[in-house]
Length: 380
Image 1 (spheres, helix red, strand yellow):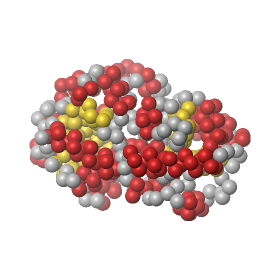
Image 2 (cartoon, rainbow, N blue to C red; image 1 turned 60 degrees about the vertical axis):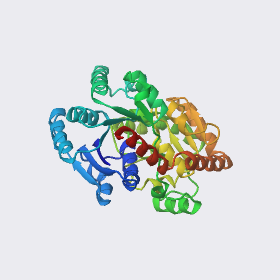
Image 3 (tube, one colour; image 1 turned 90 degrees about the vertical axis):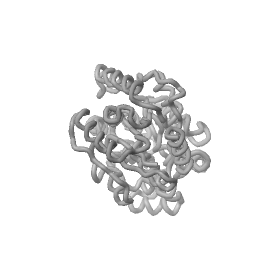
Image 4 (cartoon, helix red, strand yellow; image 1 turned 135 degrees about the vertical axis):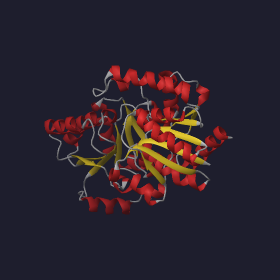
């Protein structure tokens, strides 16, 4: 089965990482993938690793929606795929215009795109978002055959935001390849901390997220001010590329005097090694589609402190492997972090439960099987 994947860019975001992990398994079960990106992120993303694994990667020439749709139409005509699978807004529109319902088109719904939390983002213009929503709704109804949602909460949100019929949306949660991440162990933690120059007595908080408003880093930096006052040896390390919040975060670090305890590392290629340094994984996102970073942290047997949002509740078990707090409440976030930092036994128990949940629900092979079954149903 030849499947043409259309994505905005093969960067380091959750959508791109999920696709990169799914593709080898899908190829093993009979999918012939062709990946078309609207632009390249080069060394910052997963494009290099996919090319090294001999995947067929095409990058369109820059241009407006119609110009890139014409390029994609040529590829669709030449390759004659059984299915076109699209992800993220611009890629969705380019593919829908290029395809015009000639080939079965599946769109992945990966985030809560049009809700109140998105409108609260100071970097989002309400009029532009509503225009994007109107275009999305129109092309979704007229030019898209089916939808895949990464979580039930995303399905529910897009039923509201795009007025889609529930029967058109199939939920297939994201899985993660624990072989890629590597096995968690105390020896690995010690080794990676030494390699990173982290003091032996440090209490290490880790987070993986690009520096955008959605990810809640402002509240995490504010929480760290309170944490460090009571746990001076607490250290926060954040992996993820810079973004629209970078300048504001730098200014906030300067005003809260936490620069010695908070470290934004930028893109980190070896996520498993990075997570292995942590005592606690912290995830202060204001909204999410499916928190892939939390799943990876659970694969690495880390206890979780996270925002109490629907998609996170789908992944963790509150009070069993995670403490959840109201989004944007930095005082509650600080209290939850301090609670776990002060209790090594509870951290170990939460971490063991995280690994159990991962093994029972979020292994990659289950996602591969479910996605392939969806492809067969749509093309059969």
